[in-house]
Amino acid sequence: MTALLLRSGKLLDVETGEYAEGDLLCADGRIVETGTGLTAPEGARIVDLAGAAVLPGLIDAHVHVTAATADLGALPSWSPSYAAAHAGRIMGQMLDRGFTTVRDASGADFGLADAQAEGLIRGPRLAFCGKALSQTGGHGDSRPRGTRLHDGHQCCAGLGRIADGVDAVRAAARDELRKGAHHIKVMAGGGVASPTDRIDSTQYSMDELRAIVEEADAANRYVAAHAYTARSVSRALRAGIRSIEHGNLIDESNVPEFLEHDAFLVPTLVTYWALKTEGREFGLPEDSWRKVDDVLGAGLAALEAAHRGGVKIAYGSDLLGGMHRHQNEEFRIRCQVQQPLDVIRAATSTAADLLGMTGEIGTLRVGALADLVVVDGDPLADIAVLAGPEHLRHVVQGGHLVSGAER
Ligand SMILES: [Zn+2]
Image 1: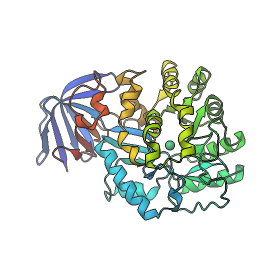
Image 2 (image 1 turned 90 degrees about the vertical axis):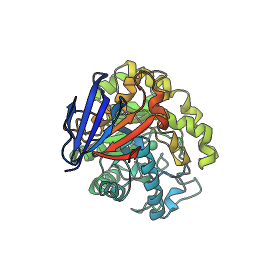
Image 3 (image 1 turned 180 degrees about the horizontal axis):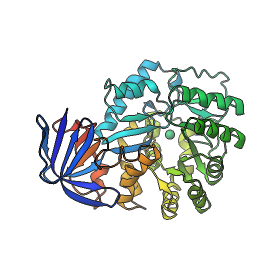
Image 4 (image 1 turned 180 degrees about the vertical axis):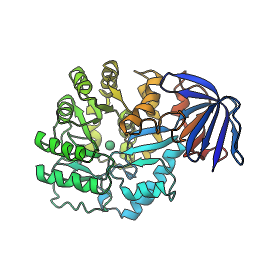
């Protein structure tokens, strides 16, 4: 048995927003006991927290661990081994920012997930979807308009695969599920980092969207959809899609649809701010950079409307290339319209619900996986405690100190 005893922390219950002062004991990868004056088992490692705050390990529900450049059109021509080496670096850095689980929103495959699970690379637990399904000319079609060929071979480092028509999208969804996809990602509307589509376009017919949902549903998985506008989000929700990614241009009319379908919203506000200020430096083509303004300003109002309406909201960042380092900045941005506890829930308990891991992660309850972060200061009073790495004292994953002091 490997045991870790954290002494004298302030343990945050993210459901109630209350701290309990006391100790937390991890053994064999799980939280086994919390309380005051706990006895350390034989051979346990003991770390004195001296009143620091303990939170569940953070969960980012929208990342691309293979997106080592913002030039997504260049990725498919990279060597898969080179892209994997970058992904290993990016995942290790996510762990160092306190993210012990991430949901990859296209690009990562079973190889990276296995490598992390076996300890070959440091990184968050990885819920992957393989390649995103895109129609021809959709957000996952990275070809410039003068190019006809698309080689979406299995190990290519691109984020998308093209499938048109009900039969083809069924086959593509089944193929990703065959490879172990945790969810299916579909491009249901226009995007920024794609060369030929318009932000305000809807993508895929309702028949195609419904077919993809049916395939995911058959495998007891769900579908996540890239969508910005009220129209594309409404179509996706009506097709049975459970997770709406970005949603910057939604309006009040979408709120009852989210509630009716018990769907989640995963805003990714930090990436637009980062793309606008640094995108070109990290490879975002000029044409894509000009599209950022279409979604940048509206995102906060969309988040506020969704929050006010009671929509389930999870944390997302969606950063690319050298901009990954801003991953925690999303906490600060959201706190312009939400309370710190709301955003902490988005990155813990609500994200766990979205990933189908309720009670396993995103909580400090006994029996959960021992994934935690220890921070100096009170993030409920000042979200800057989570928005910058300087306050992060320890990261614990599976009951081991994996980042920070005393690792
Ligand atoms: Zn994304």
